Structures are given as structure tokens and as C-alpha cells.
Length: 291
Image (cartoon, rainbow, N blue to C red; front, top):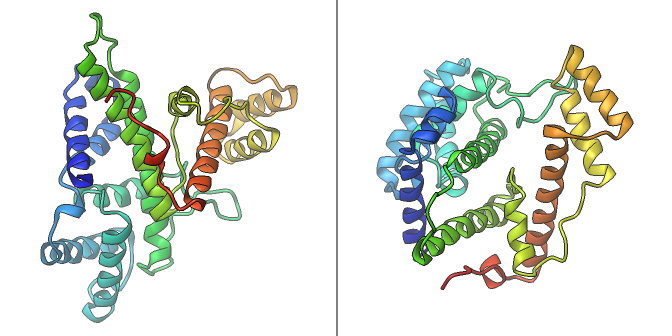
């Protein structure tokens, strides 16, 4: 049943990419990512086929990023095996195309916002001539966050229906929405990937179902964390503006939304932790509204 729900979820995402407002609203790279993410997921490959594809892909990835031993079979044999087991265990919801896209985007700086930072505050996409778990996990985890951002944008671009929505459509929309939250919980529980939703509506669902009492405003520690992260990515006038807004506590526009988004995701992570501690699943608490 879980597999069927995942397949149904994927089919719905494919349909969203056919909406003209989405096609016009997404940038070229965002559309490449979105289209890659609705291709056949790795979980649907048998091991023999997946091993073959991983072996070919890792060779070309290593060559592209500058790992010097890409043409040495003995060294690559171990790396291929380790890469295969990692992909199958932690990234089975990705497509083969997405894995390739992740490394390409990392190489051109598209994932810098979500990559860990080095001592100088620059995005760390270095491999240090080793195609190992530490390297590709940071790339794929950053890509996952980028993917979440793109799909949040897709949903914002969807037109508001002019006519009254039917009960069946309400049911389908709510299931789609709740499944997004279930997926985030699964990724946190299995892969320790923190929730990264942009819109407050995800946390509002917990408020609506009385699982939380309120949506908390950003704490000072949250604001400080986001502020310091933004400082590493801004220069010139934008940096000066960021500093002035921070010290004046005059938060507005996109900056205010960033602080609230960070606080929302921390609250979701707290909820996830509590549920996991109880050895239960989010499905035991958060329900579909229309059944």
C-alpha cells in the first residue's frame, strides 16, 4: 500500500508539470530538476539493473568532477559498491537522472545555499579526490533540499480554481498535501534529513488538527542562525541592508518569511522527534481530513 501511495503521488506530480502557469513560472534549471524528479525512482529497479546504471554513472560523475582514479577499475569497484548501497538505502526516492542532476548542479553552484560551509564561509562542494560517502551524501542532501524548494514553488504557481471544488477534489488535494508531510517524516526518521518546507501551511495543518497550540514566532536563536547564514552569501549593498535590518529588528518581506520558515521547520523537527521517541509514526497522529 505504501508503494502504491508513492506511485500515485509521483503521477500527481507529473500532472502538475503540465500546468501552463507552472511551465512559465519555473526557471530552466528548476524545470530540469522537476522533470528529473518524476522519472522512475531507484526503488523500482532490480539490483542487477541498478548496479549496471550506478557503475556507469559513477564513472562519468568522477570524471566530470575531477576524481583522478575514475579509470582505475580496482579502486572504482569499491566506490561503486559503496555508492550503490548508499543510494539504495537512503536515496531510493530519487531517479537515476536526479543523481546525475545533483552532481551537475553542485558543480555549477546551484546547490551552494544548502551545502555545508568551509572555514571561509564558502559552500563546500569539494571531493578531495575521493568519491566517498562524505562527499556524495553532502551533495545529495543539498539537492534534496533544493528539490523541496522547487516543488514548493510549483504548488505556489498553481492557479486558484475559479469554480467550487468538489468533495472528491478536496479529498485528493488533502491526501496529496498530507502525503508530503508523511514523506518528510519518513526522510527524517530513516535518513535524518530535516524538514525543509517553505510555506507555513504545512505547520498550520498540525494546528488545524490540534496537534500544536500555536505557530510560534521566530526565536532570537533562529533569527541569529538564519542571519549568519545569509551574511555568508551576500555582498555590497545587500549585505549592508541585511545588517541594518538585523540590528533594527525591522524584519519584513522575504527576510521575515525566511525567519518564520526556519522556525516552522524547527517546530516540525521537534514534533517528529517526539513521535519517534514514542516509537510511533506520524500517521498515528496526523490524519487525512476527508475519509
